[in-house]
Image (tube, rainbow, N blue to C red; front, side, top):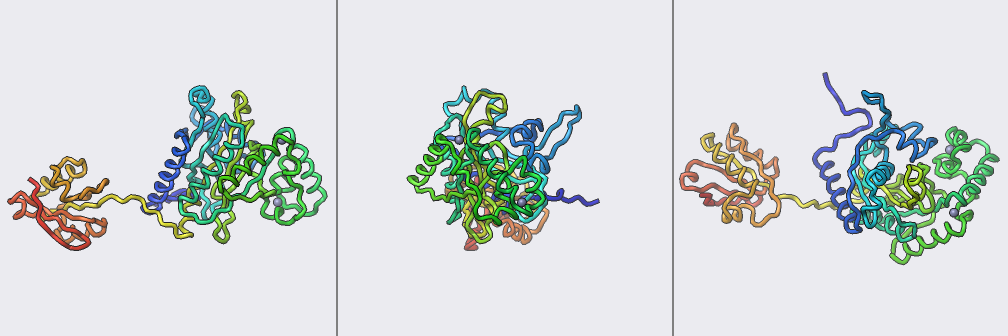
Length: 421
Ligand SMILES: [Zn+2]
Ligand SMILES: [Zn+2]
């Protein structure tokens, strides 16, 4: 019987796994520079948490969530995104009281039952950050700048930052009504949009079929109440003064219900870069809706696979620090134990200083393979090549009798004896 990875999932192997780790390390560094601390939350939660926060009439809840019952009949869901869990943890652990500024970041797999297509997976990786307790434009600007700094540091030369405001409880209803009126008079909306016009008319704006059809669409910016307008202007000003480019996109909406005021998306600028690499915005009502006291919040998440693919398209060079690779080989089986003990000592950095210096020459990280004595020395050296060894240490009986081994530099092919005892 043969098993394959479930449809829509993928294994990350070798370079792909390295790239994910590289990106996550990069994200971690930048988040920490902005004083965000890491939170790791469960991969599954009470399904109600997501329904409540993301919104019943969103695609995620209606079509894409992995919901299941456990053995005690609890209704659980694999996390489709990270914000709801972060808010849940914030409340559960009263983090607003404990932290001077509740600024959190997370990374890891998320799950959505989507139609598998290039670059879209049912289990995919995200990294994200959430900033709680600050209702002012600097928080929005901080989140947007941190997000774009990650993408730029990942080697994306040009990014396209789209900005919009969705207003608040006071000003959005009039815009929704205006959209409903506008679209009700239009013929031939796609099936999805005809269905969601009543419950979620904003989504028609970013429909791939209907969005581009109309040129005179109502714009939320014209409906913003004075407070929302002032906030939006404040965010724009901070971005401009910080040299963070953006364009206001009146059709930008998000597929989640909890957003208020600022929303944004960053796309790559490579041709055909339609999908957002990262997206986020402000959600000032969510903490309260999940049972907390009113707490303003703003955050974003990036799709790791998408960022990696975009960086590859732009030929970004990701130089993860590579350890010095050392292969330990044995000529004949008689010295296997000695070679094993030596290799273990090398990994644990347990050898005498002159020996370490001769082999590692001050390399900060080391990766050691071998010994594999059941093969001829020749085939062990082939293994060393496959492993990508920088240096190979050969245990031979004659040298060992003199308390020495052979150290071979794999690039220059140079060999010399070094004393190990
Ligand atoms: Zn408003
Ligand atoms: Zn549509």
